[in-house]
Image 1 (tube, rainbow, N blue to C red):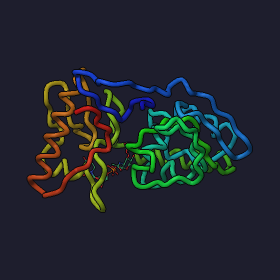
Image 2: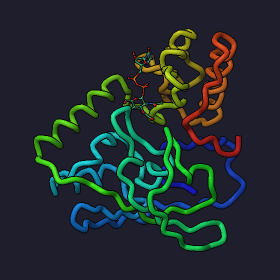
Image 3: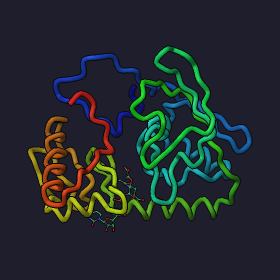
Image 4: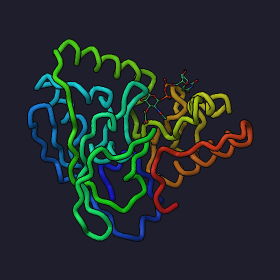
Length: 234
Ligand code: EPU
């Protein structure tokens, strides 16, 4: 099940199976303060709609390249708020083919009841709040500021690993001496060590870097870094 694929890694040899891609489900509309969006809607477009209508709630997601469905499944966000905070309902098709509307689904740090499940998200309903354009602009600036140390280019996933409880994955990787580590065309960002920069075209090389980081951090600090990235078929 693929949204925008922003946090997905598939081996170079390919994936032996069927991919269901929701990228064409892009419709969205407002009912008062409620934004109803099909799962493939790009996050950026939904933020634009909410700004245009003086509605607040999505600001913390600014700059995330993914689809709203992927963002909901992974509970994307920053330390000041995640998408799960404003989700009213999620509509999905389960593995038996039944269409389900779920109110107040469960969310946790970078996870939800849908993560890892065989479900196709079709629509989400988000509860936004009326706000002045100054208020919204302020929240957007704060979210942009939080991402100041995050590289945008070349292709990367955003954070590669989840932060272990009360620790920073980026700091651990830096302390392990891997900031700037380069393997073939893949580099651990010299700016933010939890970002892996892909200058090439090989998922296997990226996977090698992910493994190198996990091994070294485990050896040095006895901490198992858990990928935030969805590794499919490795
Ligand atoms: N740090 C280092 N070295 C580094 C990187 C970071 O020492 O190379 C330190 C920073 O100095 C800071 C601490 O680690 O004291 C935390 O870093 P930062 O503020 O950059 O936030 P983060 O914990 O790395 C999290 C989310 C981001 C989100 C930002 C902003 C996770 C795994 N990542 O990053 O989410 O944008 O906070 O709130 O929770 C994402 O999930 O893809 C993502 C980008």
